[in-house]
Length: 269
Length: 239
Image (tube, rainbow over all chains, first blue to last red; front, top):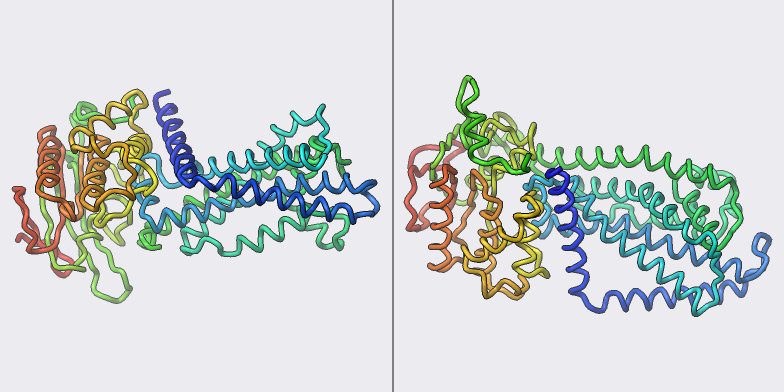
């Protein structure tokens, strides 16, 4: 029990560290809220141009894309772990985690928690602004179901960030491919437009990652968007991806750290 | 079961029948070469630190002192040989190993610039898995021992290099390690800071801990060591 409490205390320390560092940059929240407002404004007016099958009104497309924008933030936050760990390698603070009983793997996982929580907050702000300023119609009876769906989705998304963190520890470069992968996932995950518009081979890619079912679920719960499959099947897919990818990503992270320790490159940055 | 091994736990474990009493720190045939085919920076190094030992390793710049310390800390692996603390290997039992050892790396890295001294110490205590109910007391103890009271609520990026070094040393001793590894600990310290460091080392040794110190050849220190060894061409030899 004491061991569990000590672990919880160490996780809390990392989360609080990130929160305090975040607070020390006072304009960050305002700056990101403004970015959200401008993105929503842009897509609100783009939605006025949309008159296609599948979206009966421009507002339906706006609802579709607002959820996509909210999820892109979550996607970025997953990948931001690798950049944070890169900064920690440079500052020598990752070494401190490695040389603690808490260790590098748990340290990296804990480092992911604050950005994810912050992305959740920003997603909520995005939806709130969308509703209050641009008249986004949320489907209130199912909105509470979006929370557990998002938490499950985070479990399925996080391994991508951890894989990139492992790559960062091995190569000392944080952005090895993360930008184009986020862009690619935005496309095949159907964040900005329906995947039905994609060519058949690209639609196949949409089916072999967790973003598509997660996005579909969240859209269904938040704005009552119709689903390609059933809620149950989408949930099974998200849980299945999480179950496979979480242990694999933790193993990759462990191997990257051990490789760096064996070769001595863990001290490089 | 507390997360932290106490010295009495170690005595009990040492009393169990074993072929060899586990040393606080033991390096056995540790070798490391940074480039294959070149002369190894450490060549089958053996080193034993018993309870209460205070050993200094000196040597020219670039001779491999920091590599030796990093291996002893469990940060990097030797190419050959073993390192153990009380019989635990950092590869096989990393969590147990890191509960027993604390390493002060050379330089001024390893601090969060935007955190205050108190927050930094609290972070350090928690990742060292100090039992939660003891965290606050340990932080206050470290602040008191290293005379950081006036700086406790100051951010690290607003502190002098000497003050930062004092904080780094406080973080090294805060988890109550059994073995401390100090790589050039006097960097940027004034006489008062050095005296606080010596006091902390003596307290650790008085409780049966061990200390390994490394610094460049020719560095003056008022601290008295049991042994001073020179690292030269990959070998440890008496100074």
